[in-house]
Amino acid sequence: MGEFWDNLVKALGQVEKASQVKDIKACALLLRLLPSLRRSSSLESITNAYKAFYSTDPSWGQSSSSSKLQFSSPEVEAYLNILICMVLIKENHIDSSKEIALAQIEKHQAYTAQPFVAKLFYYFALSCEIKQELDEKPFLDWYRQACLRHDNFIQATLINVILRFFLLKNKVQQAQDFADRTGFPENAPYSEIARNQYYLGRINALRLNYAEALNRLIQAQRKAPENSGAGFKLAVEKLKVVVQLLMGEIPVRKTLVGYKGLGAYVDLVRAVRSGELERYNQVIANYQNAFNEDMNLSLVARLRHIVIKAGLKKINIAYSVIALKDIAHKLGLPLTDTEFIVAKAIRDGVIEATVDHEKAVLRSKVLEDVYRTNEPQHAFQKRIAFCMDLRNDTVRAMQFPQEKKEAEEHNEEIEIELIEDDDDF
Image 1: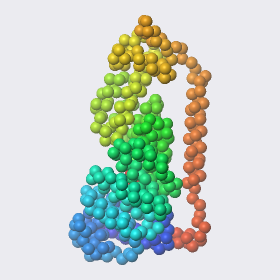
Image 2: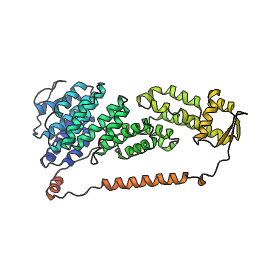
Image 3: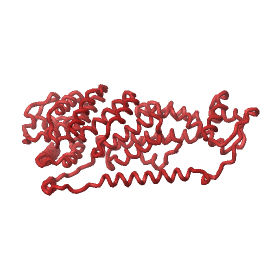
Image 4: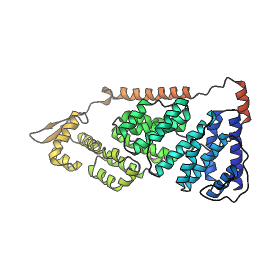
């Protein structure tokens, strides 16, 4: 407990200094110390910390220490309660975590405690999700109060919580309406911006707006922390792979190899790329539980027509003339539906060919040079848009010095040692 106790006292001391000078930015940065404290803590150590601060034993255990924490700032209390909630969730004391978070949320908090209260909302929502209590009504009420107080940190967290609850209950339309009617704060933390982009990407994917969904997921990857948040990055990459396949694109192999835990999606990409419907059905049968846990099963089921299109493209390139019954055999399609499927692919511009209905054959046309089409122009425009978005985000992310010299002097006195980036994804 010695090392944990020393780090905890030092972190709470930094919170006390930040609260005295009313520096909300320093308070937000101090949240990055919590993951390291959580990893080095245990149920016994956090019980001792609770007893040292409140001078009473908690409901989940008894303290064996007589140490005291002499801090009077309400920000320190909120910060300590965040750590307590984190450890209780890790130790599977979900009900106790909910009680601690709710009791702290209902207290009157100062402006500088915004980042801490927002994090308490996050862990309260996480506890509700673990207990399968997905009721968004109290969070909507808290969101209205946060809007009236202009609490940007709390607004950002509650928007993401509400969107997640809607998605977990498959209320995609309500999630879309809520996202359209609320404005996400521009100065929100990067972790919340990344989450919001991920949820918006999932909403757009479910609503068949794949281009916008892919753009949102790319933004989520860019806003995610560089050295942590592995679970969040993996979830974004899984959804991104499925969206790319639905758009008719094959993900880059180098990207797939760079992530661990993408075995099911690598096999899915191979099945779609091969254009073999039987192989695609086998992948779904083998990894149905994995796709369901990732909430991507409904999107993966949409890939059937993409597999058929990929197979038709290969056949169109390989054969100048081929019988429809041979196409049905190669793709594993019913013979009665093959002619309709091929005709629809021709109408949608998937392949350049004609159907001879009398002879029941498919005649491929000579493929044109791609540089005679508008495809290079569209690809170039896509790259330009990406570079402009990157430039605009960089300009918005620039930090300018504060106007008051006193605030700068106080900030120099606060020493914030960032052990590791926030990994609460």
